[in-house]
Image (cartoon, rainbow, N blue to C red; front, top):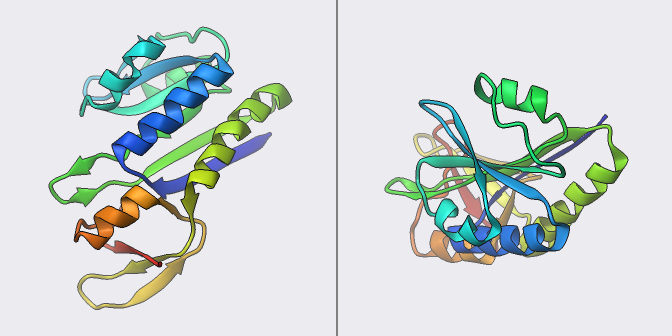
Length: 175
């Protein structure tokens, strides 16, 4: 079983470019994931622009085969689509720019190869050099594997806080 996991910050427009190109090149199926209540909606490639701008869509799921959409929550969806790759969409919110991330776990080497293509695109479009800062104490710690795009760096320079997926720390990107 192999895993893919990349945490990063990118603007919604940068995410769109990464996803559109990947979906078109790989010819895969895309599903939008909404919560409260949990719902999985198939997405046509030409609708990706709209879906990525819908604030109630928190995640996209990519599958090689047409996905099984029924299921009780995210775990039920993953039980029926075990090799899915998930993209958590980092949104621009009042508090700052949220973290994005991709995750997948599969024992299918062909599927893993396709998911690695998206991983390589994200790695090529981002860089490392992130420091977590505790806003109360000023304490810092490196976040070695976290990545960021040029667009996220520009937002950070403009004073937009970079929000981690959890906690109160703020992320600072090096030049």
